[in-house]
Image (cartoon, rainbow, N blue to C red; front, side, top):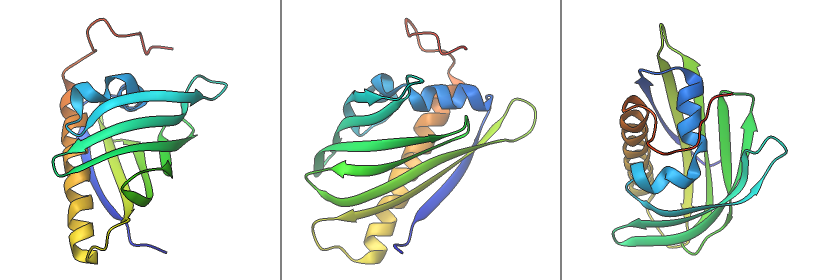
Amino acid sequence: MAEHTSSSITIEAAPADVMGVIADFARYPDWTGEVKEAEVLRTDEQGRAEQVRLVMDAGAIKDDQTLAYTWTGADEVSWTLVKSQMLRSLDGSYLLRPAGAGATEVTYRLTVDVKIPMLGMIKRKAEKVIIDRALAGLKKRVESGPAPEGPSLEK
């Protein structure tokens, strides 16, 4: 089994609010640095994304990838690579846990295998940078409050 990289952050918001931002793929270009376009290709019977196309631009690395998403209850989402120009595989997940009054601990796990040869320690360092930037962006986005003019995520 491939090694994964993981990191956690505490966000001052309820788990449902955090998952609402994670599930709102159309707004990813607003708060993630690398995602330039996001398009939900297929949804499940509950309206959650099952397959998403992402156009990534991380400077020297640009990619057009499709990911398949699996939702486990209200507190976990995982994804796996369907197709990509740069990656051989990509598996990741967000796991949300209540962390006291109105806070959520978010753990992001990621395993990436690129098509070009790369030393394991360099690959894990890149995974760590991706995770840390994603968690910081998620925290900033969630804690800034509801997105203006966005669809209501309340149930």
